Length: 204
Image (cartoon, rainbow, N blue to C red):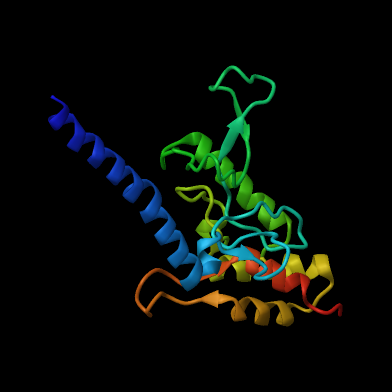
């Protein structure tokens, strides 16, 4: 009996050490050596006090900043800590990644989109409102917006900061990221990077 149990125990201990200790430590070490910025969550600014991650959107709400696309993430309602069905809106809650799960025939979705379009037009957005400005992403954490979305916000941001629109247009165009390898994905703008650059602009 002992001769059968001993190999099983030895293998259990061996693979526990290999897969639970050696392998994770090796991968962590390689990641820290080869790509430390990515391994540590793409925190911005690089080398300074972090203000956020380039991989997770933030809820910029004032007109002084470019806005991300809407987020449908929620969190537990603190007024009902024992009832998981009671939630409140918590945009860009990375602990609860989710979309709205509302279909194209949902009246609730249509009403929200119409209200968002009207609010953006009242805030000074120019031209057609891009789809990603009024619809949520599947994760609710998307850090990017389309170039069209960013360009549509220039007039409102310029007014709020008393900056010339052509200066902001040049800033947006400088922050448009192209397709990966020239083929994969769509052109996009990282909202956090853009707003950090916006704050770094000299006063007019």
